[in-house]
Length: 58
Image 1 (cartoon, rainbow, N blue to C red):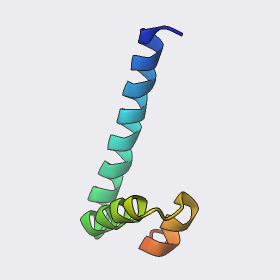
Image 2: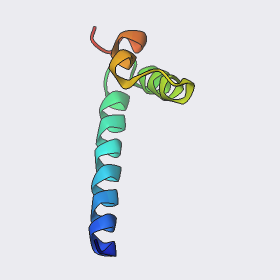
Image 3: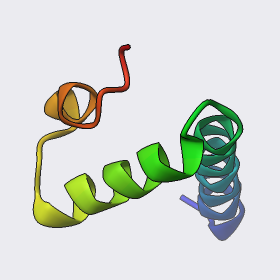
C-alpha cells in the first residue's frame, strides 16, 4: 500500500472525529457530554457502553 492511501484514510478518520465532536458540542449540554465521552474512552469503558454511561440516548 502506498503513502497516499494511508494519508487519505487518516484524513477521512480525522474528518469523522471532527464531525462527531462538533455534533456533541452543538447539542444540548454538548460540552459536558463530549467531556464524558472523552473520560469514558480514557478510562477504558467499552464503546458499546459509552452511550448508557454518558446518557447519550436521552
